[in-house]
Every structure is written in C-alpha cells, then in structure tokens.
Image (spheres, rainbow, N blue to C red):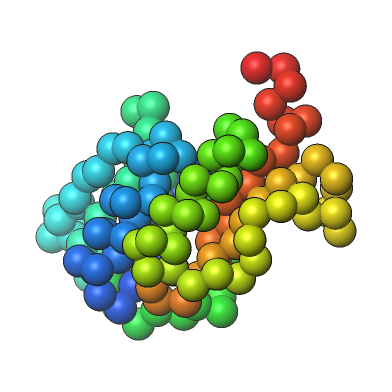
Length: 134
C-alpha cells in the first residue's frame, strides 16, 4: 500500500483550488500545509490532502511533468465516479474518457479519466469486486 505521493504543479494556488473542489467528493476532505523549513535542507513546502487521519496526497510547486504520473482515485460507486468526473470538468479538467465500464480491464471496472490543470492524468475508479466485502 502506498503511504503518500508528491505531485509537482506549476501553480500551487490554482491546483489547491482544483483539488479542493474534486477530492472531498471522494472522501478526501482534510487539508494540511507543511512548511518546508521544518524539514531537512531544501525540503519543499507541501500542500496536503487526506482522510481518516492520514495525509497521503501532496502538492508541491515546481515544473509539472504530466506525462510522468497517472493517479487513480478510489470511488465507492459508479455514481461517485460520475460525480467526480463532472466535478473535475466543472473545475477546469479536460476529459480523456467519460464514465463507463473499462471492458479492456474487466467488465466490473467502472471509471472516468480527466487531465487536471497541469495535464496530469486522473482516473476515478470503482471496482465492484473490491467493495463486495464491505
């Protein structure tokens, strides 16, 4: 399991505003600022997002490298995928593919994919078999 990821973005304030609109729908509803001067030398300032007592998605300002990262966010239902997709588009994302079954993976794999404001590929994913035991 991953503990955290740093995503380098061109305009930190713009990216914070985007993710603050999209992530709460997915249950990622905690924000935290980390001052880089509190870390080791040359540690960047970080803007974090998390849930359930964990901060795991961090933004840092710099030169974005959109082709280097694809992030899949867990959704709890097909409806949540649809809503996250719509919310991301309303916040300025560009569509890669609309919500629907991803038959090339599995008929139960339901997802939508967008590019955020820096061009990073974001996927909102509902895999029904991963929720059956809940």
